[in-house]
Length: 266
Image (cartoon, rainbow, N blue to C red; front, side):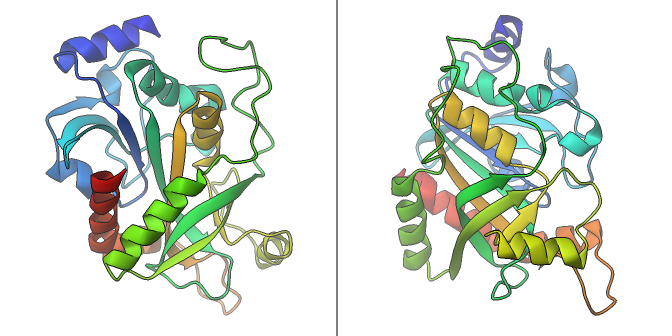
């Protein structure tokens, strides 16, 4: 990890970020507008390359609203064939570089029937249905303890802050539980019924491994989902990644406005 950190410090003139943001599918525009240093994942030692449309695959360092921020413009996913340890490696790097708070964003399908496309949902908790855990393997005591508590992964004070910011901006906001599946196939109607009965409000293919590792590392976590589609169609309409990107584009203005307001107040 030291070679990764030394490389990034050299490329960013010893930039010390305090806040991390992971930008999900279709939500990378914030990084385009605020960019002091941009480094491709391909160039960073021990980073893996993002292959998904809508994920540029760059690490962005910038000062936003008076805060020093590092943004992942796109993430890697379990379904791409990477291990969860590889996927969450950037979180550990952020911790070592100085990040205290992280905002995890994603595009997610609506399980809660009151949600509609382009809604924003604050994540209050998650359910890990990946069948794996990023903390499996040898433990690094410099990052966290072997058996981390998971009773408040998404910090209540940050949830309240995000709600207050949304209210101030007159942005309607949802709250709910994020369910993580491995993907890349979307869920069947029967699977969505199961997820709904078991307490999920939105479903996606990311975020949970990052949240687990961030919590393990002692980083304060805020999660926000952009609801991009109904998670499964029962009326014959087919789901597509293009629909996900389209809905994220519809929501990106209010998403960006909300993130900037949170950064002012965090």
